[in-house]
Image (cartoon, rainbow, N blue to C red; front, side, top):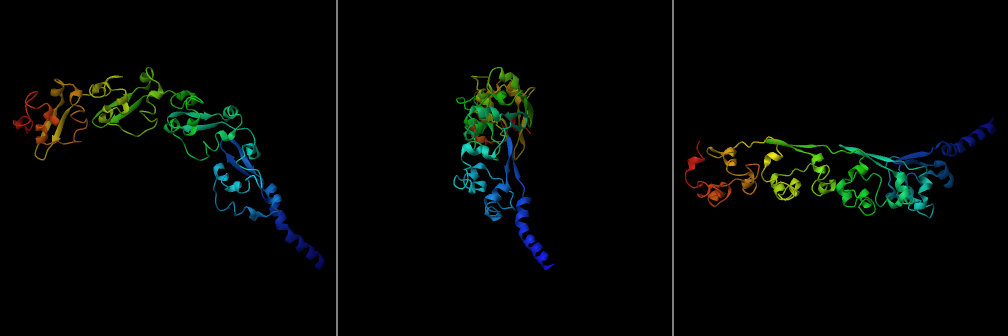
Length: 337
């Protein structure tokens, strides 16, 4: 009986190491655009005599769920601690990619707001580069590095490294080559105190190409708002609407602000107020005579004193006693309240 008990205890003492080795499972790391990478516990435990501590927690902390990039591995992080080309094949060796990344590459679809999806064809690009994965990874594309804007691509980031008009078609324009079925829609700009402006892509694409505006004048997705003063200085729409390439933004407001009829502007003063009648002045002058050389489109941005007007500023540019009655004297002609 004692002999049997001794045998049982001996077997029990030797079980944990063996059972642990058998119970450990392969780990699959999902990779976007490719088959998952499978890490074999069995192979590595056999190589290191079932010594779990070679990796845990010296290299892999089981409490942390950190995903390492290939760039980090090449700096001896994660698998790269051993796969340096000395103990095991190097993660930086392009020929060794297939040792971990098995199976065919897959297409990747990028979801983009307000624009048709973009599908990146791995198979096509792998053939184009002659199977050189590192032509893109990791120098240009690092897993988890975020989304690149079209403006960044035009500056040579992401796809723009190759799609620069030399190695491949440029990312600047040619939108429908990646955004299949893309048809730009009209854009409505809403403003306070004035009718909205509708920008027609259809109309402008009959005369211009995408790259004529994007992104030199307009980022593809932007919250930047330009004033009419900015446009008068060549920004935004003013890049073309300068009186040469197209009608100027200074004046002819109704061409963009459909149905626009400027109203009466009331200037509140410490004592009383002054009312400016657009109707009366538009009968004699054009919008461009005052805007924006004399007045920003949004009144109240800059206030002038009567003394400044007498020196030819603001209303005083016309109300000088020659073009119109002077601002000095006859106060009740404007201050009639």
